[in-house]
Length: 540
Image (cartoon, rainbow, N blue to C red; front, side, top):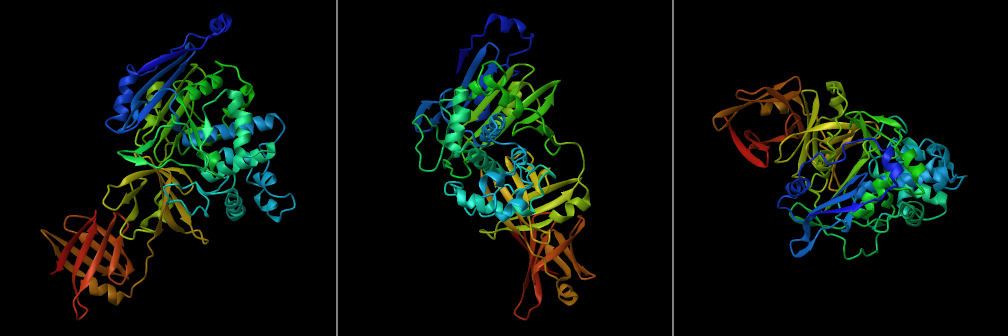
């Protein structure tokens, strides 16, 4: 389905526009939407913005049992696209003299005589907007990370306590690492500078001046209008997220029509009071080599065929969003989906005729990879584990019973899972060693504690050495120099690491070896636990 909304411009302005290719790069956008959605429940709404106006495309319906079609006026959760609006609040606040981007966030959140002010001076509003504050992705006191409603009860008191907890040791300014925690602090601090709460400040200083009447915050305790689509995660209904203190990081819901109005303002196709603030927000401020872009005030900025493509994406449990525009071509695209399995980034870049950004070229050295290698066990499901391995210059992660997936660095201790909408971050102990792995997917953070290695006496390792028959192949165990090695027929030899007297794990693949003993304590077999299967190999 396609609809067009014309924007009437003065003829003089039209005469000054260069002759640019304004049509979507995809020949049949409607077919592309249907292909992206497939047979999954939910829908997609797309807005194509050009100098002549806006063209809307949509596919799908609200739910299998709700035949209302998705339209340009359907409300979607837009997740982290909210961060762009939060940073616009910063830019406008600076232009109006309410804040300076170099202000420490603590200046606006804590009393001036608070002893923590000095320790937090490096965490500036600018560092929060550009993800360079050194703060973790989520605050350490965010105990609802595994809940279907992870942000509903996280309030201001806990947000401020988390800044006191993490801020003094944060390596501010050294590198970029995506932080929802940081975005929440930014919104809280700038709103305080305006003398308002975040919701009121955003509405009065950003959304209203932009004319976005159908863009609103989904705060805990509020009820959305009837035209808000339900969300899905593949075939399953997904919980709707509500927010308190974390609202500046991802609480907005909006329509394709409103987001098109926003892009028209960004492209200068529609005049708004925020023109100067928008211009400030899209200036590149830092390199983000790990993902192949620069970053402005929240906006990601890349070059494609001699033009800038400025974009941001977002995701919640049941939604995906992508918003992008090219100032040189005066075109933009909005892609909103009510199923988190839809790759809105891919569809959006295809419509723009641009390739997604690629990380800066480079190969991870073995010495840099070494701290992350090993096995990690789910905090609440001991049978589920992950192993991090290294080969051909890259880290790989493998979840129990799943294939190994390559990781791409996004910052220190922070990686993107290639070809999957998920990220991995690593948690370090006080001594700097890696203590845990956090899987970030569909807005949920799941912690896997590092499997602890123990040292066994050489005599106990020697008891395990020998050959074990595993069907047509032999598993050879050898003990050398206080270390245990395993080798299958025709395969390389790998070291096995003890986590108990008779339980060992490998670091090259997600596998464990469990040794069995008879009543006398003699080792009689080993069990290879891999890919969700147990295979017993009797000792020869």
